[in-house]
Image (cartoon, rainbow, N blue to C red; front, side, top):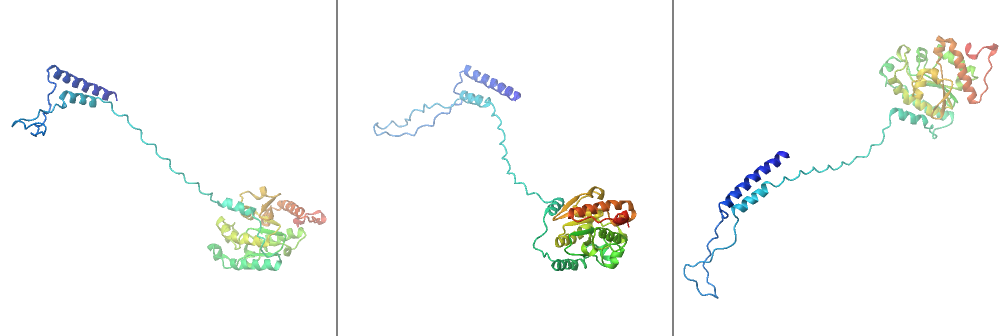
Length: 324
């Protein structure tokens, strides 16, 4: 900007000097354009003009060089126009935020809080008919290719369809895969003793697993296998609508409650799954390897009986019912 002002001042000085030189020389009208000769006309009020006479030249002043120079000076030295600021961009319309998408964890949390459907049969034959229909879908299931290729048969569940308590395990073992009934091997025999210690028979409760097929080598179910079997055990619980669910072991507890906490942190208190109270305790196979943990299972069963409003059976000979 400073260089431009200096250049304008220099040009103005040069033009002014030239203009003054011309004025001193008396050349004020150089470049005046003479008016064109007028066409001879005869006025009615005047007589005819002498031949060859013409009208006087126009006295309208013409633009001289000096005036032109002044105009050039004024034009040249006029300050440059101030730069215009670019127009402010118009704010873009902000689209409304999309509604939050339900995540799997949020969906499961909402399911845990939902009550069981009330439009299902409440009598034992009606519930058993619905369970048989779900079992008919389970038998040909091949969602888990490895399990479908290695199983002998599916293992659905057994017991009273209107039981107050459901015992929920992880998966069938070799004996269960052979007989088609859950908890019939060594661990199942210990579970039967726990049930009887509470004053019940196996036919008084309902027994089922997370998986309906035996994993090879009795390994733990994978998260993918649990996810594929989830619709089956969730429908079982909707039909059964038990007051209490006893999760025996880590796998069923974590699958049902959607948690990663261990049995040791989940036991000794009740949790909630839809319309059921959930109690977590150790799996009978764990008790076979760690007999000292049987006392904790008996504590959990006493807590269950107390919550159900049932008397706690007395042990004979001062022994706990689960110590046999």
